[in-house]
Image 1 (tube, rainbow, N blue to C red):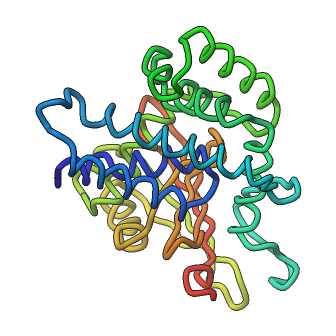
Image 2: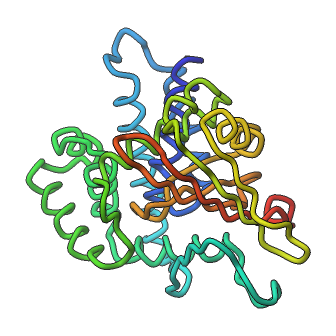
Length: 279
């Protein structure tokens, strides 16, 4: 159980976030999935991660259907704009949290609950349709159609990766997220290119100049200083090439990863240090 928590909880929170667009709800879904795992018979579970994925997918689907039944509407459309620096009066700047949440909801609002689950599980997490069928409770052919419709609605809604496949970026991101979640310096170093460098830009009044680190050891050590103590990391809105860092369920940093040959060569972080403590 402890091993599964360390290896699978970051993945499960990320998966639920892609469907629900709310980090608090995603963490609650992951918590409930592990609670059900603790009550299950281990002898009846061949693949713990697959079992957790099915349970979390169903929980998300139930939640989305419930929200739709209550006629809940997402926020007005917006756009996530990730930049290397933020100039101008901080009072005129929309918070990172609002920008990202609005962008994700704008993508998700186009999809029905079934389309969301089929699209996220297949296109983002590369799950086979026969397993998605078990989660959604509908035939394989129907799940294919749901994913196809979602893909058509999603086309052009957000920036895509130009030089790295989505599957490769997802795998690298998952390794990065899990290493940070567990404070595992060795695992984090292993996903970094030997020539990696990182730059962190802090937004707000009196912000210091960007901080730059070079090399695996310095970059990894600095990352864990900020991301290895209670922070929750997820991938960006429905496949955007960014990572989002939350503390106490509030977004405080956006990270852009540059990936080459399945290793991270560059990390650009935009950080709002007040977000983690903002009431």
